[in-house]
Length: 246
Image 1 (spheres, helix red, strand yellow):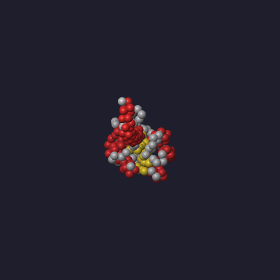
Image 2 (cartoon, one colour; image 1 turned 90 degrees about the vertical axis):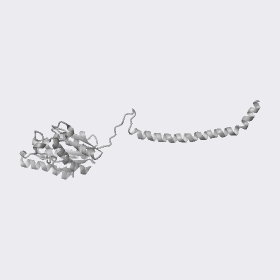
Image 3 (cartoon, one colour; image 1 turned 180 degrees about the vertical axis):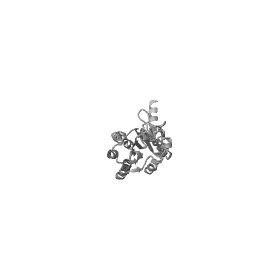
Image 4 (tube, helix red, strand yellow; image 1 turned 60 degrees about the horizontal axis):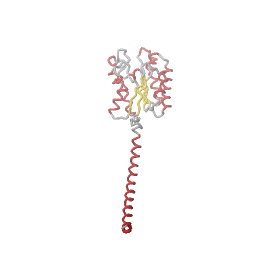
């Protein structure tokens, strides 16, 4: 009986080998598919890594370009109940309405002079800035700061921005003073901005308070800072130049 069983096994040996060989082929085919699957999975993991951190928390990736409004109380929106009514926020609304990939940052500081702006500009340039709107000088004029000092400070700010990021587009906002400051002083003050824009080849807003300055109903009780409606006009004035850059 034992011999007969061994003989039968011997007779079935070729079929056993064929079955094992067939199983081996199936294994190889399955391995190939698994390998291909792992390749795709690895790719997916690499792509996912850009949006998911190791603790499954979203990673904030800066995709928007930046428009930095660097100025004084006019930029800050002094006197407004809601800072969203200041012209930088209104610019953001315009940008968003057109689907443009820009974020507007309000870096206005009430009472800021050109000297103060010069001292803090490097700090605000810690992040890359694509467009730099420079709105300073009014407080210098109202305080009677020597014009040579105002000019030098503005030029230094321009130089610092370009040194930190040569690709930044600078838009210079011009300012004018009320006539009670004296004809010579107000005239020379106005010319500072036009001269700097020309010398440095900057985009230029001749007078940021165009159609607002000196108009009582568009200014707050101090006669200097725009109302909500005044800021809407300021935003449109800035937009006329900013739109061409975007």
